[in-house]
Length: 299
Image 1 (cartoon, helix red, strand yellow):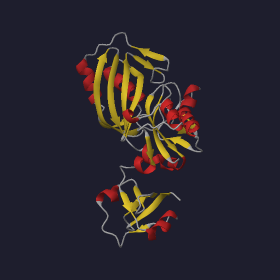
Image 2 (cartoon, rainbow, N blue to C red; image 1 turned 180 degrees about the horizontal axis):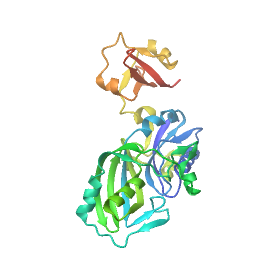
Image 3 (cartoon, rainbow, N blue to C red; image 1 turned 180 degrees about the vertical axis):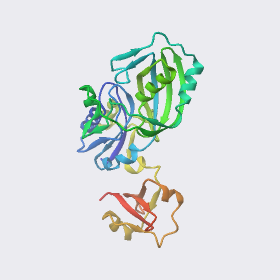
Image 4 (cartoon, rainbow, N blue to C red; image 1 turned 90 degrees about the vertical axis):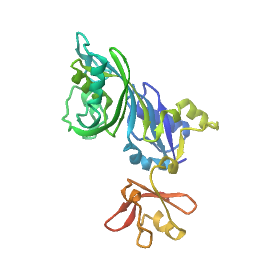
């Protein structure tokens, strides 16, 4: 059962707990997720089973989309609603236009300083474990890209907005930074991941629905073969003579093939498939040798 699940993670369990539950339900040996969601957050969590775990990096690099509820007027030590309030504004003297302008000012490429309460690791230990002990670890700021941000609703002190962003963007830090911009402080109150790349919340499965699938019930959403899950990557079909070399990890020399397309050359991965449509490997183009080298091979 080498598949990818679009799981709708429920509130108040960790991403790893959600993976463990899915692993137990589906009775598989291996399982892993492709991007952590905080226990208090809900929404799209891609879970890879068995051989599909080898593809996790292709999914973790995808853009994420979130529905964010931000609370103005309070700053917390964790930058979200689970933390202790460390600053409180006497009043929230902001209007709708100021809030809209503040949100838009974060659209595009910007620099973000990762929070201590995060799954980033220092010497193999997640930063949040240091933070719980009151230990501050130096973190490097990094470039993020908020491709789109849109205001949905204002009911002070709560502001709801959606955001599409690059890998590694912290919504809790974005809320904190917006609060600073508005000079009233803010923290993340509620978060739902509504999409990861092409995987939308509409097509996600609850753990209950996953249990129904494991019992044989047909549910036409949320379950993908490895090939289907990577459908945005270009494909390259090979003949039977190349099947064995490819499954042994040997590169494909392109001298006798037509000039590779610009899409194939620029792709982060290429689906190598047999003439029958079976997924054999994931490769990448090497311009200096004009070959497709094998990055992940399926025996």
